[in-house]
Image 1 (cartoon, one colour):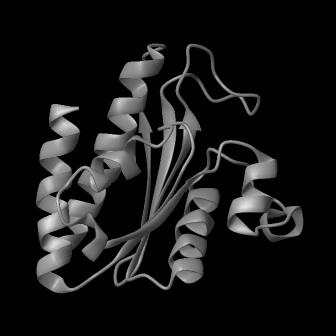
Image 2: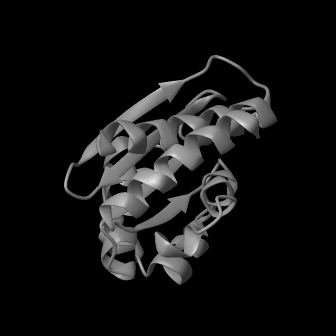
Image 3: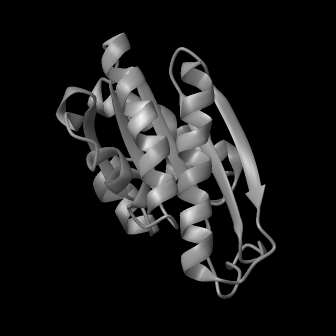
Length: 159
């Protein structure tokens, strides 16, 4: 978690310096994004909450996003990552919402995405979505890559 900790420390300091806050909705990263942000001393100044939105049931219960709200979208897609980021931001009243949704492996998902596929969403003063493909079936390594990519996306947005 050294790489995650280093990025999270820089991000946390920038958020604190700017007086900004964040909420996270992650899936195949399994909580690593939130854990990295929370491992930074003083995280309560910027981290307002997070959820591991791993299933459709979790999406409804944790994010209050019913099936109708995501009609025509599939998880592990940029539009879905965007709505998760937006919803996190709105529900927590934060400056930023950060999301991740993908397939860590060792197999792909039911939508046809290979292991190592994830989509990231960032909502706030800047809105960004992106897709990452690692080409690897290594579940744990993919989870770390996904979390690092999400934190790096936020770091770039913070300047």
